[in-house]
Image (cartoon, rainbow, N blue to C red; front, side, top):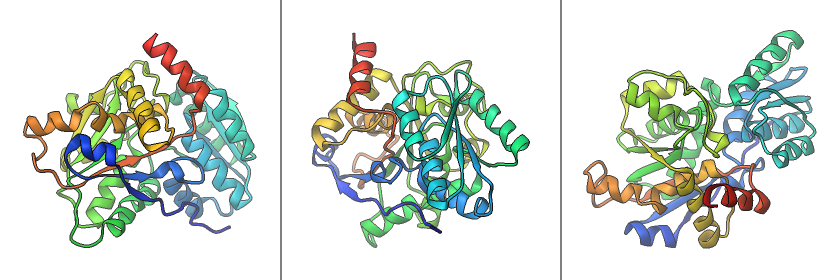
Length: 320
């Protein structure tokens, strides 16, 4: 299969979220991608360009990039090795293995797994698939905004686009997509959880910083350093960086499940919490977003690292 490997996902109006904000809220349902998250856009695009003659791909991942790489490799008929940190839930490992990939657990956080993936790429001549830091990934991810523009139709422009940030790959894609759509002036609301906040830390410091550790349960946001391009964009375009707690992200996941009948992971809950925990309303009251706000687009990035059992365990851990 030559690709593209992603599907055109629905842009759905959320009655519950729209009611809360007093403006139309659209959900870009990336959870409905074949691999369960937006990651397949960029990874599919990169693999098409770099891995067609490859003897195999290797990808370091907290889960979703690995799922996407494993899916794309299976469709392309090339072997895949996915390196995950020890924090990756067993259900994710199983899902990656179900795609036919080999999974190795290395280290405590993604950065450790990534060092091993780079070593394997060198030693075994495999194509390295980075989870978030590559121009081809961003180019692939930018298609999410192209689809939003098509779905909204001419003359309709978002008031803001809400996105979860881990290593910054999706954020870079959204910036590029907005530029292509002629929407460079649309503010981006970049959401992270406390304890997985490498982008927010960089914005505050005015330079990239490396977190000591990832302490958030939103393990898929767990890069200790944001990619350079995402930081550069924070200096160039209107990106509002905000944090929510793990409890707020979990509350968002549960509310979303109740209201929209869709289960997403904590990393995605960070973006949803912008609505459910009143972040957007607060930004409006502070004058950082307009009071009369155009349609809000929330990228529901999805995620493979959640099931009802995992949700129950998070509830016990975070809410007691």
